[in-house]
Image (cartoon, rainbow, N blue to C red; front, side, top):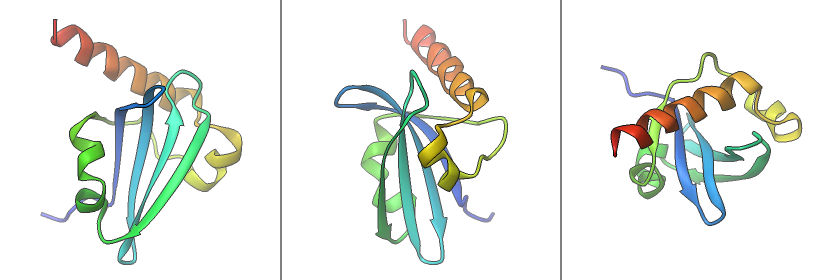
Length: 101
């Protein structure tokens, strides 16, 4: 089975929940963070290696969700995440929260 090159998570940040978009490309990886409530871009981190290893601690603290499509992540740094992606993350968060009760 081939490893995934992209993954989407909802994680807990210092100031609330965030959407995290993880990507592997050409021996390095990145993590873009967005505000869960608005989809506003917060920051990007890059490193050598795969996101599964480099950002494992972030991923353990959150939960994965599947967006309806993969947006152009570079464009989202200026334009925010599309509403459909934000809604998918919020819906996944509600399911996780209600299943933990």
